[in-house]
Image (cartoon, rainbow, N blue to C red; front, top):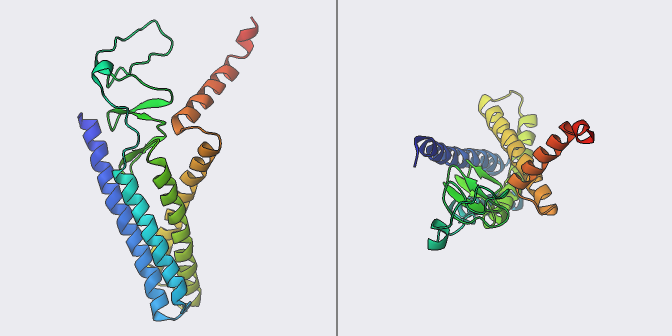
Amino acid sequence: MTSVQLLCRLKGQVLVVVAYLAFLSVGYSAGSVQVRATVLPSYTFLGAQVLTGLFMLWCHFKCTLANPGFVPITANSLSAPLDAGLSFNPVCVSCKVVKPPQAHHCQVCNRCVYRRDHHCPWVNNCIGQYSQKPFVLFLLYGSLYHCLSLYTLLTDLSSQPDLSLSSALVTATALSALAMLLWPLAHQLYNIYFNLSGVDRLQRQFTRRVLLFRGPSRKM
């Protein structure tokens, strides 16, 4: 493992801890508002928020430990020859495995991943064939969890005569987390609808731009 890969791994572990702390701080603040019963004294609402938060944490934990779809390293793949004359080389030059269609190499994991979307530092794992489902569920439950928390926090802020700095910071954290969850959720749903991975989508966009740039030259 190179120093860059080690640094990316450590950064991912730190971001996982930061994510858990942000989730817990938002949930604790929203829950304490409801327990005080100044607004929304409904324990059904609190139970829905707690249940959604547990689902979110479970999906995050499952996505962190999931095998994203690593291409198995076999004896045949290690000894497979590299054919530089092919336009599409079936053997990865980094990990020396025969790459099936839609498999791409991850520089952080140092493995080829089937239907690789991207390497997410917030879960410290690749998003691929087998980790996409818990990742999408994590984004979905996380968005719902922060929507419930924001509703509670914003209602509490509107009822306070003086703005509390801690309440404002927690509300801003929940709003930022919601935006960071909705954006990748939209991308994942788009990729699922068109049966694409993140890398395939980027490659198509790059090919389209190259063809558009070279359009006039093709007529010559």
